[in-house]
Picture 1 (cartoon, rainbow, N blue to C red):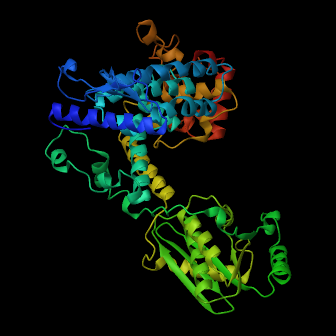
Picture 2 (cartoon, rainbow, N blue to C red):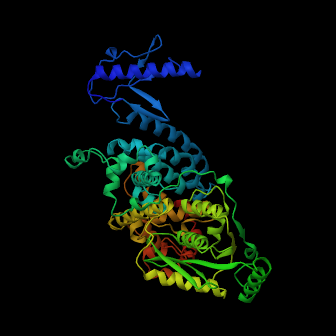
Picture 3 (cartoon, one colour):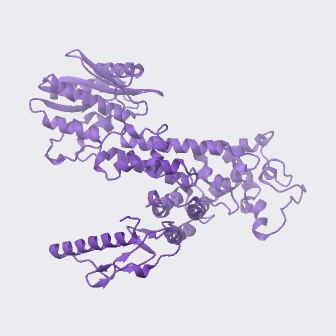
Length: 556
């Protein structure tokens, strides 16, 4: 409860507690007085807890400074400091398994270790982050060392390695970006459920906008964040979740996927054409054939269906951010509606989208458009609708005609502007990854060794090797922090110099010019660090052979 007057607040709270107590007596439920706690949320440094007299039955409720609710610790000032300290300690305890499995010589590979981090540790950091994200930036930074340590363990990097380099090397965003993505996903989910979600009004029409606009210190609420991101993420276009129906009462659509038994690669098109025609002749003799298809380009998405026997063609242009899955489903939905309005007795809808047909045949699929198709098929009493899968671009005339119509819709004005919830989530991730990548490109290469050889934060396949030792050595060379070049930081010594060349000992010196390194490949001549350490398997193989012949891996 919330009120400016403390006495009024206590009176209202006591009345609510009494109502709960009476309710528990009438239903047989029982509230534990010993476990019940009260917290007075206030920004005041001092508060007189003795004046707060709340009782449950005959026992007084203890007033505390913080309380755990659904896994989150709410402190009386809502600073979230206590919760974040507890969370940090819990996460550090879980890093022990990473320490055990991340040995340089025999440890698990990077992919497995990062997967363990995401499963065991990041999942805990994610939980409730939408709520505790209201803490100050300085307080939230308390959690950053947790991820930094996990990434160092997963990659085998030294503590001296720059955090931004670790994130770019592993393609794992920092926790601030992660919380922003999760918050936007929550906004999209609330908009998806519309008025059925109690937070819809506060997010769609956020209060306190004037306070935020007049202050530079206040963090934006979730609703205000939605408005700030509206130009980049179209939350308002998300398709509304349908009211739950008794899907078990619907007829399960009949989907024939028999042609999936034939592999398309290397199979002559004539085989598919013959098998398709055989199926049509044997199983769908009197059925009207309806062909559907979707098409997607860099700037547009279209879909269409054709009924050659009735000379019916319909096409639509979707939101350019839509997926091809959305386009295929919309074409099928339009086809079902036309079959109903045209009173076609028996029809077979032929689609080359296996994922769309598999979704339609799943009676518990959460997608609203899939549910709409299933419901409409069940409600059609005078028509029989079946589905058939055929491969694309194998010379089936109807499928080719639908494909041409779908492609012709790409240049038309948008007629279907809504997006699936998953599509909004994909756009959200792309938006923040784009911002992160821009931040990385702005890093000065003179101050970051990895930035000199890697221009983006996207993963490199050569970072994953069969040997854990090779994997760690390659990563350390790319980041520029190795045992030979940076162990002086931990020993508190002077920076090392090359014994033979009397030059500062750096990764660049070791690979390009050190006279102590024999068997240097001729391909290294006139090459830069970027050429040697780039994402190219052959270059990495040459590099590793060079280091092993010089017995230098132990110094990395």
